[in-house]
Length: 332
View (cartoon, rainbow, N blue to C red):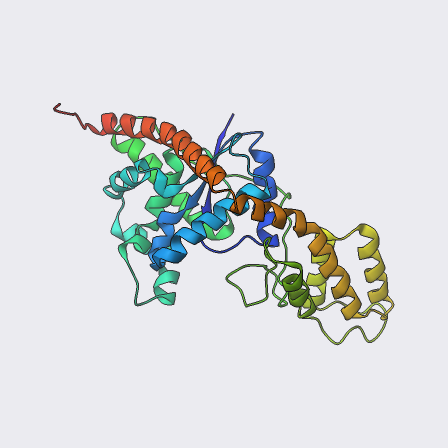
């Protein structure tokens, strides 16, 4: 059974794009692989979050992943900072990571451009911490998006470099987990092709949104003036709404509005009302589960503690062996 690891951003709420993208695949993977899912709170420190938001965001992400279907009995779900062995491996890998290769990293250059007044060492060594996250459990597969492929390549570099420097075959080089065509891409409500919390306001429908918020967002979704003649090509915003419909509505509903569009008789207001109600029907069970778990502090504490114990058992074994390989010896 392959070991699969995926990091979870510790900021913001989960939206339909997350759910139909990675989460549904995580739910299936946890029954087929040895899965580690962690909330990457160390990584978020590169933007200097406030202490109040920091803890609240980590808690919210934990709650929502549990509500979405991650089973802490099947997978190892943990908070990154609950496993101090990660920080030690991060330090050790930094000793063999070079300034030039880190400065060439595309994401570092982008962050320097976006936050020129906060170019901290954590931004520069972000790929090293990501590598430590992965190889501390000897994960061989990592589900990553296009924007993280270079970091995964660097994780392979650091794993292979360690093996080469110490003449061992210890860390397996990690590779991208291939979802094949199983990912459903959910577009945004603002006319963009991506639903995301970092996009414009109102772009995303979050799993925790109440019905009033959902209706308001969907009714404000970008469209156009409508087809002027039968068979007219769809604009991107309208195509987005149909793609969103295909994810949450019945086939009959989608077919009905597609035919209305083809006939140039579609009323976008009616389409949006139907889409909003179907999104509400889809997200209501998830929202209710989120509220239920959020109110159960004892359960959350149990899940976090169990995840930390399972992750530390794996990470502790790696650190002990890495120390021995490097040559650390205790004098007591």
